[in-house]
Amino acid sequence: MAFFRHNKPLLMPETTYSFYEVYCDLLQIEPEKIPLDSEFRINLEDYDRENGGIIFANPNAPTGIALPLNRIEQLLQRHPDSLVLVDEAYVDFGAETAIGLIARYPNLLVTHTFSKARSLAGMRVGAAFGHPDLIAGLERVKNSFNSYPLDMLAIETATASIADDVYFKKVCKRIMHTREHTTAALTGKGFKVLPSATNFIFVTHPERDALEMMQALRAEKILVRHFTRPGINQFLRISIGTDAEMAQLIDKL
Ligand SMILES: *Cc1c(COP(=O)(O)O)cnc(C)c1O
Image (cartoon, rainbow, N blue to C red; front, side):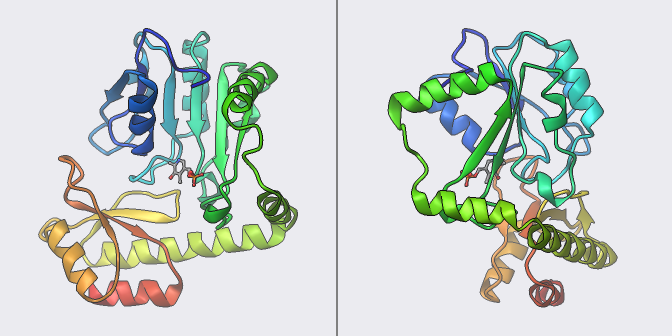
């Protein structure tokens, strides 16, 4: 609402967080979906075309793959007149944040959420980082429809989460450790696991149908996500749980 209502399309990956398209529909923004490369990576050179803005998640979802920071910086240099929104919902699970680039690139907006690594989805807290002019634009829009989106409990809880950085880093590290262990175990069973910098893995098996695996796991009361969209319909997105939960999953698979 603040930045992307132009006559030119908003560029986004073809495979990414599904809500971008929902907001485009709501706000009558034309999305232009750029395919991932053959390894399911975002190739930012493909974004060198006419646009009214660029948005992508880093790491991306549901692939889990992260882009290196220098690629994002090169994109910002090539598009000084476009707003580039980097959605870092999963950045704490092993990717590099682009926040350090804000001082040099006034066209960069970075968003975070407290819903993932901070386990506070029910509190509905997020944050945006960018040049003061961009933040002023966000504030203006926010104050036009909801001046007080954060209640007192949400503010207190989010503040406490930021204050306890030791615990936060410890939990992120534990999840990353479990992720790497799970990745190795599934690779050993013949699965292809995309390199993940998130709290989930995106996996496929050369001989097993993904939908059938999803249904068989469901019968065992293990819930994993299957997407019906062509291109990714042979993959499962598996959230990282505890070591015990992942051992169960590996055993059932
Ligand atoms: C979860 C998520 C968000 C934001 O989630 P909220 O709970 O609405 O803060 C944004 N982007 C991606 C890619 C996500 O997975």
